[in-house]
Length: 124
Image (tube, rainbow, N blue to C red; front, side, top):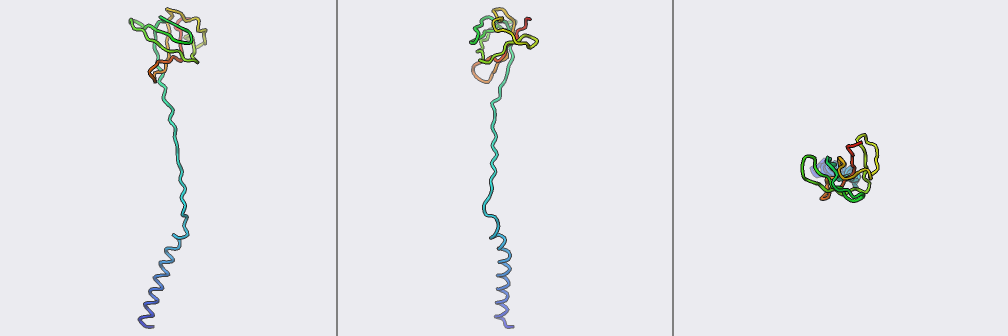
């Protein structure tokens, strides 16, 4: 075998080796699958509690509560689905709340307006 034949055999061998290495890449999967994860965040509701005595009450609208041991008063908007309960947690009629009634209001403090969700009457 001459020099030329050896060169041709060497080049042929290298080409065969390159083809053997590249072939799996040529037949590999070319499209990709993307998975997208989405998350949603619910706004956090901060419920605050404030004890006091009713100074003004308009059912379905507002309640003004005087702070215990102070001359300050605080106004609250009443939520449409407000719950009125006694100390034991039993539902009561909203008309039992009058000026001078000792209560605890539970209100949403996330916005500019304090919205009462629950009123607990201290008296039985």
